[in-house]
Image (cartoon, rainbow, N blue to C red):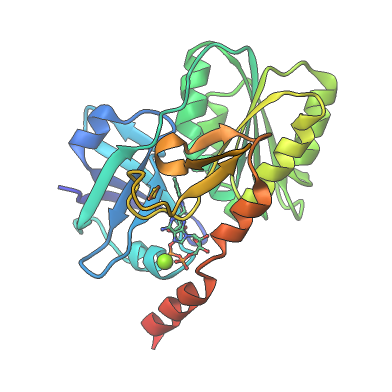
Amino acid sequence: MYEIVHKSDLAHNIKLFKVYAPDIAKKAKPGQFVIVRNNEQGERIPLTIADYDRHKGTITIIFQEVGKSTIDMGKFEPGDKFLDFVGPLGKPSEIGKYGKIVCVGGGIGVAPIHPILRALYEKENYIISILGARNSDLLIWEEKIKAFSHETYLMTDDGSYGEKGLVTDALAKIISQQDIDMVLAIGPLAMMQAVSEVTRLKQIKTLVSLNPIMLDGTGMCGACRVKIGNENKFACVDGPEFDGHLVEWENAKQRAKMFKEQEGLALNYKNN
Ligand code: FAD
Ligand code: FES
Ligand code: MG
């Protein structure tokens, strides 16, 4: 159980695993995530379900090596097993027929947007996807996204691939030219905030998938508390998708940095 049956490198520091977890593969829905643990000493790592194969019983996860736990996880090879692999967690995305939808994926956010975009496409929505990355080496899953999009725009910060600029440049242009019914954005907090600001003026419904620090993933510990309008919500059970126009972004950014010092110490400890 929880054996890695496939591993590949998608980009610099970005890896894909297919993990044998038939119970989770049976139930997984777009927008949900798992929480994994590498070993007895390991911390809990939330990761979005980027894809699932109910027939083969596998879950696909895509992760960026950003600190101790994800760097350790990147050393796993096919045949290795996770100690824990818990899920599916979180509320699934609401897959309805909305009309014209812009799906914005930034960096590693392209992976979690994939199953949602595919389900929305299969519901006969018109899908416009915008993928963004710092440079061409970090742009992932272009073909998989294009397969379920009617239009695709590729943006890189340095212009090394697609168009030079930010995803919000492409988004602003699209909403000035077309009537858009909904926008879905997944990526770094600053990107999702910027997307929400662009759509606010026209009051276009905007969903974002928040990734605050999570521990238990069951609504008990409070680690993932986010402020949505005047309410406190727990992203692990009430989300991770929320209305981008209601998110208190500064609070979310502050909380994401809460353990920077300890995270740095953990990384250095490992390297010594
Ligand atoms: P650290 O050095 O410990 O932390 C680096 C940064 O990662 C921190 O500053 C913090 O912002 C964030 N982080 C650290 N611990 C946690 C934690 N327990 N929960 C959430 N964020 C944390 N990353 C991916 O690469 N691919 C995904 O598909 C993906 N999906 C996610 C889905 C959800 C619902 C959430 C909440 C997070 C997701 N993340 C994903 C982020 C991923 O969990 C963190 O990058 C990872 O936990 C960092 O661990 P670390 O020890 O390697 O880095
Ligand atoms: Fe503990 Fe959400 S992770 S309440
Ligand atoms: Mg960590």
